[in-house]
Length: 341
Image (cartoon, rainbow, N blue to C red; front, side, top):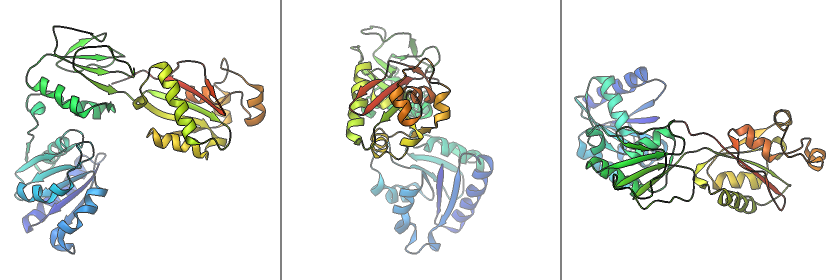
């Protein structure tokens, strides 16, 4: 986590230097910290703030809370994208999580700063105050995609207000959620609970209970294609296969292909569209796993292996869900990994 520490007074400078050194020293694998001093920047920190918001994951204001609020206000846009903001008074007594406590990591940062400089951490989010794990924080730590931030807020509010909320994961008992009633199926209608947290790759959910969907990144896609196939065709093909398998595209973890296709524009466009990395495999790697998979002498003659999409999906990890799907100039295979929490 890349942190900008901002100080405005002489004593604030001392606290800033302490945070910069001690936070890195105590949590060296978690933070990269840089200290910016108001009087040393042309135009002051206020003029430099747009750059800091763009380039840093978190901002630590060593100032009064009001100063931090006024300075950061123009940049507060989206709960999913806002930087973590922590305020430390210039006597170093308090470390206050001000903005983006869960997803942005301000709550954790505030606690770590408090440990680094022996300050009191101030965390005001309702779930934390009650010892509950907020849904957005839970999702962030597991790497899940939150289908609806509004429903995440609704279900977290239910938990804070002691309403009965249930939890289901498609890979129970591997994953659990503390303090909640855990189900080994998705209840359709249950008088015992008023809301439901669901961890699932399935696109179709059958329940009448208010719910939030959390998507695990556990779907891998192997792709083979002829030269020059446009990205839209690959993207449409992936959506089609996912629809057939009743899977959400938000669960896509990675796309894999053979090394001779590493520069294919269409595959790159598909990876960008689904916001996932591309993993490139060599012929030697594919040869090791292509036994018992679909074999094509034509493909062997063209690229040196009997198949591309199926072995690449298999190499990415997980269980092959179906035989490869063939579209015009494109082959697509999908594997699904177990969800581990």
